[in-house]
Amino acid sequence: MPSNVTYEYIKQNPDVMTYIRYADAAVGAQGFTEHSFAHVEKVAASVKMIMEGLGCPSREVELGMIAAYLHDIGNVINRDDHAQSGAVMAFKLLSGMNMPADEICKVIAAIGNHDEATAQPLNRMCSALIIADKTDVRRSRVRSSDEITFDIHDRVNYAVTESSLKFNEDKTALVLDLTIDNEISSVMEYFEIFMNRMLLCRRSAERLGVSFRMTVNGSVVI
Image (tube, rainbow, N blue to C red; front, side):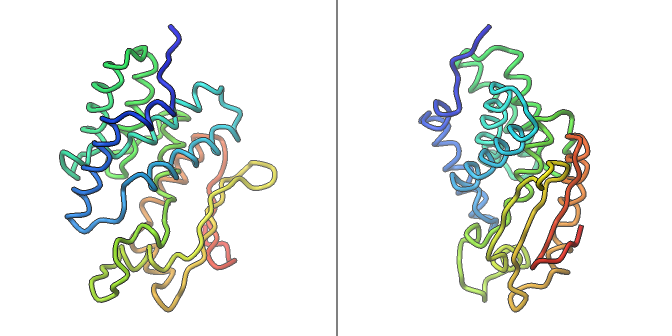
C-alpha cells in the first residue's frame, strides 16, 4: 500500500515538533549537547547523502530521513534506552498517520538501533542512521561557550571547527573530515570519548559495503 507520509509532512507535524523540543530540553537539563532541530535535520541530510550515494530507492531514502528526524524523541521519556522508547513513540505516531506496517517496521528498527549501547547495523537504513548520527560532531552543538562549565564532551565538540561527511571519489569509503583546534581539545581526547562510536561507524559502513575513514587536521587517523 502506498504511503502519503512524507519527510516534509513529518517535519511540519505539530506533535513531532513538540516531542523534539521537549526531548532536547530534557537532555539539555542533564548537560548534554544539542539534540534539537539542527541535529535531526543534519542527520537526515547525511542519511540522504549516504543512501542516495548507494543508489537506494527514493522511498527507502525518504523512510531513512523520517527515521533520522524522529530518532531522538525518546529522550523526552529518559536518556537511558531512548532508542527503544523512541521507536515505540514513532510506532504510535506513524500508525496514527496510517503509514503501512512494512514502512513502520523499517523506520522503528532504524530508530531502535541507533544508540551505541544497543545499536546493530541490521540493514542499509539502520547503518546509514548510525553513521549520520555518530558523525554529527560540531561546535554549534555545545550549548554554552563558557569554558568553565565544559565537561570533556563539550570541550571535544567545541574544538571541532569544521566537520564534513562524504563519500570518496569512487564511493568505496565514507570519510569523516574534521578540523580540531588542538588548543581546546586534543585528538586523543576525541578518541577517548568517541572511540566506540567510530568503531560502530566502521561496522555500519561495512554493512553498507564500503569502508569508514576519518581525517583530522588533514591526517588520516582511521
